[in-house]
Image (cartoon, rainbow, N blue to C red; front, side, top):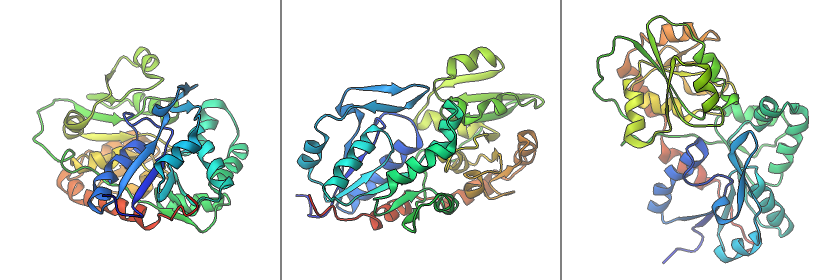
Length: 337
């Protein structure tokens, strides 16, 4: 029997089988929620007809017919809106009209991504993002620096840093195979806003560049960069194997709020080379777990010499249990339901 006050509804514009930081985050807090007697239900695009967002197929555009009835039937004790897409917008409208409490999360730098993909100036998108979260009891975001950035754009004092973790049953050091070349790895969505071309264009001697992941630019980049080994999306132990065998994990993104893939690499003992921007600055211990430089070639040269054991040990800073505790502590009773 479910304890009163322990039923959580998460509303998200992502499908459960997608490979991204948003989906990974909620999947990894589920075991800790269950341990503490909570149940989690989802409203996602899989309940409705949907199409991929043009140029950004990570976001699914669903028309949520009878969303209000679905929420009433689930009758949650707590409600969390995970994304700012169509489902998030329709949920926000319904919950606000009926005076129902909820909290939200800010996972993705949408103003920067929309500017990169569609050319829309950030001055137009930041007010919309601020409005979307304005009635939230708590806005959970990835790091303290993201809290400061959101507040610099007019968010209130209800923005909370929400840490991330890593599945240590999967991502862990392993015996490495001999390789005459320096293996440089990136894992993630193959899309324009990830700045992957800076990685692909690196002219580093005797290296093998590997890209794990899928995305809208995959076919184009395969044609454009024949020296990069594109292996598609990987999960679980197969994904961990790529991390374990890499000499350096290269993270060229300038727009991620966190970058879960960096701590997955670290948990496997693989140092990170990145650009010194938000995300890497919050995650990387410079000279210990990775190196940062606007010139990725220089970052790689420094990172490749780091002690893999130190990288692995330092990765224990991150924990999904801690992420669940922050999430739980910021739940609010829906009340009006």
